[in-house]
Image (cartoon, rainbow, N blue to C red; front, side, top):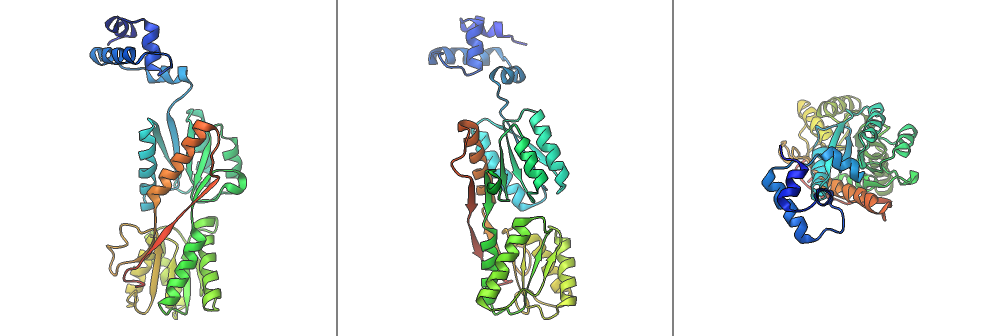
Length: 330
């Protein structure tokens, strides 16, 4: 295996010069850098990354914490942020909490032990214990999915209240009068509370009615099926449903069909996310397209700005959305 001395000898420079080139230090002539890099390639010298990181006090590691990996939103977001970090030579360490809040704090501590430079946290909740854990982190943290700006935590969020309002508006335009909401756990302020509040305000403002129901379940297709079945039994007069996610909506479609109801006719249905299954399921699902990849990119850029300047010029970035009209609410 080639050594630093071998590279120095082949390049005709000192060992310290080779070290400065490897560590990308200032003050080395471009011609010398080219000569050393050529010698490294010819020798087959492998840089000791651990030693390099210790010397530069940089690891080029970014921790990413997600609540689940089996969703279109997470895969698209991680793809977006990975593209940004790849361009900057950063390596991503991915941790899946499986929607366990205690594991979030565990991974925050673990990533700090691993000396990551920064952390992107995809949050499904933002309780006091988690806020304190973020504040304790020596590595800067950017939150995606929940609004951390009241706690001075830089955040990238989706416009969840407004999407709920627009869902109510679309269902009312489609002629619906008895509209309900299939949500998730109450602790998820963005996906459950804000989307429901938007729907509720749309109904009271535009049609002087209240939501027929607010069911709080899980993020899965199965949960959507169970929820819709229960609500049909309790509220058979339902003619419009806003679902917090596309997967919940797909489960609801299956439940409606099981009851002999054609989604889009007797009961209109809208989801959120524009999951790849939304246009494959029959009938196709009307939904709101969220730019999850752009959210990941924006979070990555915000974190890089924190690393480079020590501050972010934007404390909260709100992403846009657009309505995708399909069969379930044309």
